Image (spheres, rainbow, N blue to C red):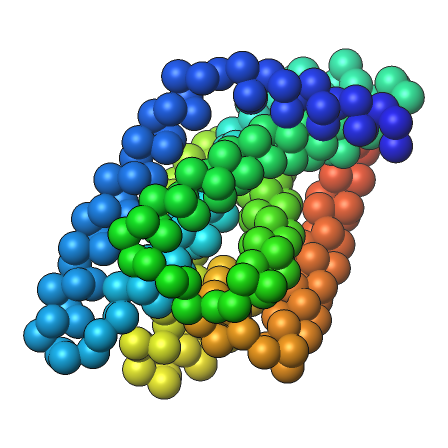
Length: 258
């Protein structure tokens, strides 16, 4: 574990040193929050529902923290598989998968924490009092961070599909679009019809996107427990796929030499 902790910390420091990338990401986040805040203010004025932007902008902030912090581990794994780089690590005293995952988590953590701090200040200035109690904020923040870790794990499955696919770019884009649609990453699923929500419930996006971020405006211990249990279920399912695929990948490398 010390090895993976070191890899996490090295990746964390490298990501922290890339000030230009972080500045661009924060600028994009600010523009996104500002535009959608204006949109929800206009909708609230027409519908006579005061504070509508306060709810949905905080929701949007946590959603974007999960999405934008993704370090695109799928492309890294795909390149490693296609180029044969992973073959060099098979006989090393370290798991290739956990190595890449620890590096991705280090990168993701920097983006997540910086966006959380910067975004919270901007959202607080634009909307005022958040739709949750301040004592709930650490819990919501921790749950969203956990969802970001699951999101990274999900994208590892996309990268490992390079074992069968000549390109994963289309698959990665499809997963990203499904996260927006079925996970309610921009608009909460509560505004969609019931039949659409019933479909979304069968996907992992419903759990670690919508249910997690929903805690922002509908926090309760029952909702927290439901979210935690569903997230755990999807972690087990995704991890099982990763383990089986990784074993097949190692077998192929050992037999064919990469």
